[in-house]
Length: 201
Picture: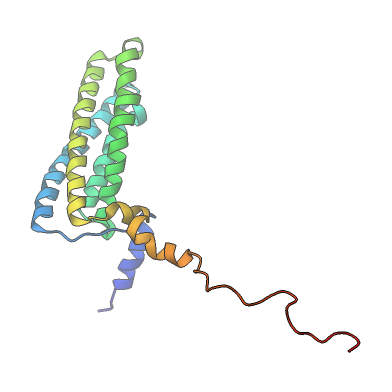
């Protein structure tokens, strides 16, 4: 049977997102934490799906129709199942996206307008109330997931911030290679200081 290792590597190159590929091996502790994170991720996915259903059927007008929770859950699931052999990268992407989703997309761009102006535009007050409650609960759930994902990354990839951004200790060899060389001492060359032959001599 032919070796298909190159096909797998080609598939990874084509399907993986264009970010640094960080992978960590599971230990007993990370396996336990990832199992708990998996349960939270699927719950977040189901709640996000229900929020999207409410927004699409009752025209609630949340930011991106509540789909930001779905995307956060998918990123966590990709990291848990080690999609494209880059579980660390997907957990970092989840950490960044979920943090922005909690503060900006859910609380600032969705919940606050719903509470301030919801009565003037919403035709389904019951659906709007359920949507707001799900949004708050899912935001709290994602905050717990972010805390757990950060613990996993700190344990499995202690230098994950520098590895993901290409700064810090991992970037020192490149900085040293681009640094100007140290001066080699004063040069003995002096302009017009040579003993050249004079004209007419």
